Length: 339
Ligand SMILES: NC(=O)c1ccc[n+]([C@@H]2O[C@H](COP(=O)([O-])OP(=O)(O)OC[C@H]3O[C@@H](n4cnc5c(N)ncnc54)[C@H](O)[C@@H]3O)[C@@H](O)[C@H]2O)c1
View (cartoon, protein in one colour):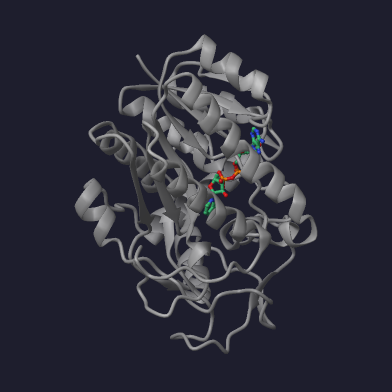
């Protein structure tokens, strides 16, 4: 079996990528400290895959643990998801974010180098673009100053990876700039599991529909967009998961000292109000929401130009916004049944 280490593999995107990897004939091995995930993800994965996945509980900043994991396995590549990702929290505790998100990448690269593992896919984000001057945003569009310490960690990690490859190491790396991941595995066995009050729109919508939250606030309806609410590119998490497999397979075919980056989005923008209306349609329920003031730090509109990933990796999104919201709602309802 072709083993792939997935750091943060018990998290939202990592767990779905584990499914895609198994479907593509790989053997994912997880390392996660469960700081933002739950052990129940592993049983959800088992129900989907019909097999247990090897999972190490621990911190990617623990060099001795990382060395042990590399010693005990024979990795062909690594996907590095492990990071803190809450934008608001990062403005309150910047050092927590710089410490976790930067150090874990440095320790990972050093461990990969000692064990001769060359190939890495890194989780970056469209947050590096800020409010871009051109839309849809291309990989070549200049990045803006980061709006938050979290966003800055992604910019710095991208720069670190580029410098690392430039230094002539025998390594191959792709950064994937995710747009807005939504949805859940269609089985409803795994999905997004926000701890506390969700920061993202879709979990807030599904929790409001389930009666966990009283009402959803739409942050502003006076933006320069078709209905005044913010525009984002919402991508189904299984499409995003499959992009990691494509990226790995592409890396395996490259020569030494390779670095590239790709947008991963649908290529379409939807407003917050369109997402709400689509959710109401697929769930058959009416959502309790109101319009509030703009939220500081929110970008007005961003969506991806996906030509590069479509043409170079041969990947494209296949799920629609309806599919994403139906799967998110299915997942929320299953969570409710489990209590
Ligand atoms: N979800 C999004 O909207 C989004 C968008 C763009 C980029 N990203 C990036 O994608 C990656 C995965 O995001 P996600 O939504 O799946 O987040 P998540 O929080 O669900 O998953 C991250 C996982 O990493 C684990 N983790 C964090 N620090 C760790 C450490 N030091 N050692 C071991 N495990 C650790 C957490 O417990 C969690 O299970 C992150 O790097 C995130 O910044 C996410």
